[in-house]
Amino acid sequence: MTADARDIRIAELEAEIKELRRLLASAQNRAADDALATAQRSIHHARELSTEREKTTAADLRSVAEGERADRAEARATGLDAVHKALFVDAEFNRQVLENTTDCITVLDLEGRLEFMNPGGMRVMEIDDFNPFRHCPWPELWQGEQRQKAKDAIAAAATGGVEHFEGAAETTKGNLRWWEVLVTPILDENGRPRRLLGISRDITSRHEAELQRHLLFEEMHHRIKNTITNTIAITQQSLRNATDVKAASDAIYDRLIALGKAHDLLISNRWIGADLRSVVEAAVSAYVGKDARMTITGERLQVSSKAALTISMLVNELSTNATKYGAWSSGSGRVEISWTVQSDQFKFQWVEHSGPIVQKPADRSFGSRLIEEILPSTLHAKASASYDPNGFVFKLEGPSAALTAN
Image 1 (cartoon, helix red, strand yellow):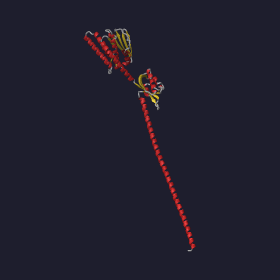
Image 2 (spheres, helix red, strand yellow; image 1 turned 120 degrees about the horizontal axis):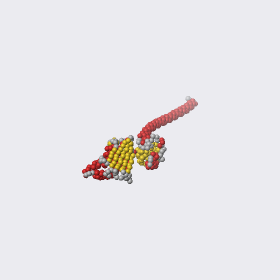
Image 3 (cartoon, helix red, strand yellow; image 1 turned 45 degrees about the vertical axis):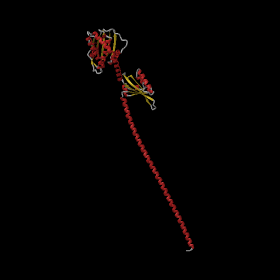
Image 4 (cartoon, rainbow, N blue to C red; image 1 turned 180 degrees about the vertical axis):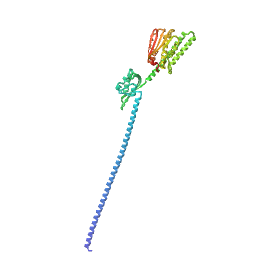
């Protein structure tokens, strides 16, 4: 091979090598570009997957939150339903309490005007329709000193205090009742009185029992003071009329026994009733026995234990006065006792004769009130006492039905 041919061949080979290098470089660049593109696609795909996961997680969280909200809403709805039912039950219970209690429960404004009265209170106050009484002053339902007590109670409760008092007041139909009253404030959310609550309890039975107990104690005191006087008077009268000591002793014994029986009658609470004549005879026999110094006129009449006890106490008191001051305090005095029942009226009369000159006492004693007011009221009767100089006269008139009523 010639030198020229060799040079040409070398030049061709160098050109091929250069081309191969170019092609290799180009291939490397494409591979790099493909790798870069593949990497970029992988990164983009990863980002898309991450975004989707985030979206899925957020959706799951929203779902859980919505579920929890739904559960809470359901729980609240269930709770509200339970509260509503409880309130309904409580309201019905409270209505039943206000309906059936025998206490008179009132709500007043701070000036003491009526705003509400429970149905049970309307019954005990004998109110058929509350509307005419709405906004009326509550103290106007009371009379006398009780009205001032009601006003004082309102004033105390309106400043946050609690006031209690007892007093008498008539129902709307005029029936007198005794009440135990409590007035308290109804406070607002700031602790200040906004209304007043009044609770009045009917204690008429308790008051009457206390009055009766007081009367019995006063009667017992009165009887104890009279017992010795009566015993002395009976003894003197028996000795004055006796012919010898034995006769006097027997008379005193009989009359003291009769007096004891009369006292037994006064404290007995189990007497089932008796004949009126027997009641009168038993009461006066303690003082004069059954001699000619008295006359009893009246039909046989069965009376109740209440009437028997009342008439026995009445005759016992009249006999005591007759023995101490009247017809039986002298040796010649007499007493006429009579009763009649005509139609629906009962009349009882005690008339003294031939005793000492009668004088009206200067002071009105318990004994006088007993025979003129206290005992007659038990029989719904009216009594009158006449201090005629010729002899004391006592009259009692009332409905005959009271003699048989317990």
